[in-house]
Length: 116
Length: 114
Image 1: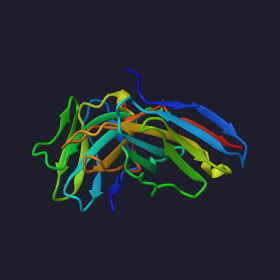
Image 2: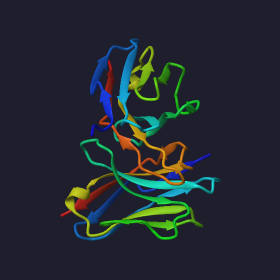
Image 3: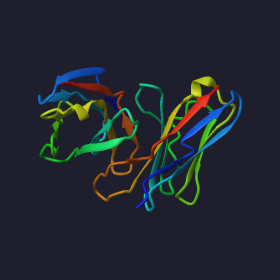
């Protein structure tokens, strides 16, 4: 009965380096979300995957950010040429699709990214 | 476009009293779900309660209730008998349709005073 798993839990990287953040959703959940949360702030939507549909990338802040989801399961968020303003907690969530209704999204513990 | 607004950056409440956290939303879609999450200082996101746009009755879960006023597009969270452990950030969120995106408001920081 594993929940949403994110790795690494903490990542310190040098400015200009690329980073990859991983999210393992709950098995069978077709929806997967990525959010960014800066210190003391709200959740900024980044990208949303739903089954085999084209992802909603409308929240990605720049072309340095990209994400993929392989086999409808694991997702990787990649940030290229990291900047100090990319420092934040990156949260992943997943949810099943319930026909005709709603169900909550289940969150991982997040990856705390620090760019130095 | 969808939008969630939480106008109270911070709130204080005395222990054992009730508190209402405000949330208004904007969508042109007739089908949507509204959610509240709690985020304690540990950072985890804890689901509290949800309301579907077609639900006739306000949702309740233990000490949490959702005051849903569809015409006013508001979905306020009411916490009864506040406890010290209720001190946390509270986020309102909306999902458009059963397969839509989930967007969040900026949150309200609730502090419960002994």
